[in-house]
Image 1 (cartoon, rainbow, N blue to C red):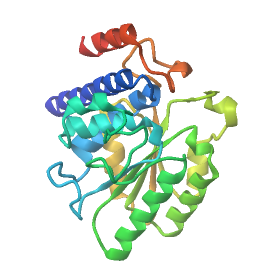
Image 2: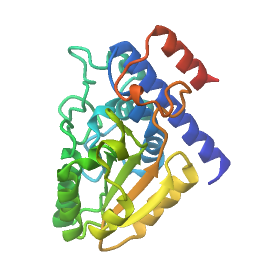
Image 3: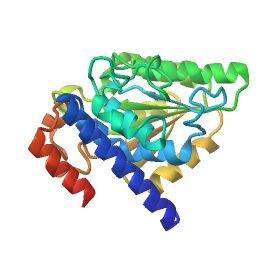
Image 4: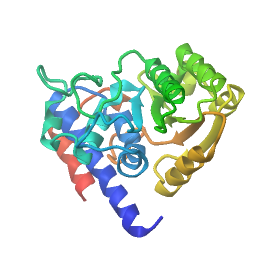
Length: 273
């Protein structure tokens, strides 16, 4: 990847992380850990990969993104704001009454949100349905969805995978955010869903495993996904929960806790360094 593009992507990811910290701090609640882990993938999707237009959020030919791990809405909102869908100042209204930025994405409120999210497992089903609709309508758009590793314990995730493979949805790309931690502890100790690669392959997916913080690997994976025909692709992105904020990294207690004033100041200082 050329240096100029790499620097631009790193800056976009940094701004997304800053937005996550500011939003959850202002809300005094939210899910910073998994939002920070997916920030690099979100930066690549919104600034490089997807065919989108912030000035026309509902253009019919746009690529779609579904945040299946919907509690990590702070990352999606920060990506949308950084990309220009709405002012970044609005990120501090996260979870407040009357705000467009609720605790889970709402497609009726927020520009750029293609599907509302709530119960885990629903998003990947919605994404598979969108991808099938594109096939039926003979439309060229692609559908991307981010799934949590803890979320992959849900049976509905695997039903959706079975559906996607059955209908040969090669326009669907599932990104599994494998940061290894969920609300109750290490994923492999709570309800071990591994090995994801072998299971996804058995369900009919083309599987790519990457470092989810390496933009060269992220770029190569999305290019490979586009080249695959006749089956959906799953990108298993190995990430660090709380990536970018030293005291949050690999700490399960930051799954669903907001930084206080002092912690917010420290986090922003690190991200701005």
